[in-house]
Amino acid sequence: PIQLPSKRRLAKAVNIADLRLCAKARAHKMVFDYLDAGADDEISLRRGKDAYSELEMHYHVLSGIKPPLDLRTKIFGCDVKLPFFACPTAGNRMFHHEGETAAARAAQHHGTLYGLSSLATTGITEIGEIHKGPKVFQLYVWKDRELVKEVLDKAKEGGFNALALTVDFTWYGNRERDIRNEFTIPPKYSVKQAIEAIRKPAWTYDFLSNPMYNYACINDDVPADSLAAFVSSQMAPEFDWKDAEWLLGEWGGPTAIKGVVRPDDAVKAVETGFSTIWVSNHGARQLETSPATISVLPSIREAVGPDVEIILDGGVQRGTDIAKALALGADSVGVGKPYLYGLAAGGTDGVIKALNILHVELDRAMGLLGTGTVDDLKKRGPGLIKQRGPSARDHPDIYAYERGYGGGII
Image (cartoon, rainbow, N blue to C red; front, side, top):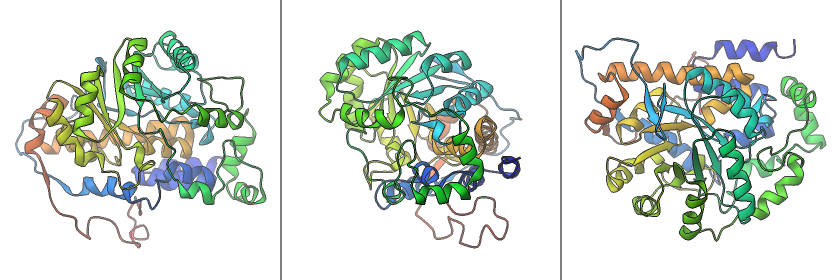
């Protein structure tokens, strides 16, 4: 019964912005803000979304296509049914006890790629049993090469066919909402946190009635709070291109460099041996005023040429955003916040709904554009998307939600 209000809210959600409101209503403020926030003044966070609004879709008519459209494509050389997927994100069980298993089940349900973080709260083996399709394992730049080898071996044994090296996390971003909320993993039992826990009974019951989570991909014997200091000590700011060459040799399979926003870095990555460029600014959670990823995508595609695989994430809230990214040079698109809102709102059902919302929106956008397949969208894309200047009318005003606008303000 304690979960019924959350389930009712989830059932009424129409778009990703609605899922955000559902997550905010259910989750502890400390947990929601960790998910929702960006770095410093959150300029890059807002800009990442605004940049999509400034791209117009100049559609063709009488294209002779009908639903359902063929959204199949390849990611890391593997066949998938959708050109977007759930990005690897840390600590999913803080949002809902199902954690990464919810996202893996949703990815399996939709027939798309699943990404697992090396700071996941669910083990590699368990994910491999749930998701039988293509999977990418995300790795940070660790100091301890033996730890790296151990984790890579686990990923290979678990059926992960691709690796993503995150290179924009050598320093920890300044997330001021977390500081104000006294955010810790797991949460502290302070008076402030206890009061907020009382306000969010569904999340609190879920948290207290399930086992304490840990970073299961690294050492499943150490609780998350003890391991946090270890993880911090393992980050290697001095990690460079030579170290990346060593890592590529150890993995020996498809590998993405995740966190690229410059064409020259993309070219260097290809020369080093990376098979995939992952255009990302870490969800605007690291360097404040880093560029919107959709804005730098065309220049990176031009720099590396048509044959290098490019993944993009950052700022995606709509299926139209995914369509714009595919049109401007991405081969596939990763989403983070959208599916985590679904997870925080309602576990597996919430993640499935998040991906389904984006699927329906993308299908509609491609149909109205006049592109019947992902390949067609990519081929004709540059002629369909045009840049324009910003407008004060781009975003809903403060009374939009009262008027029945589903999204409210993001």
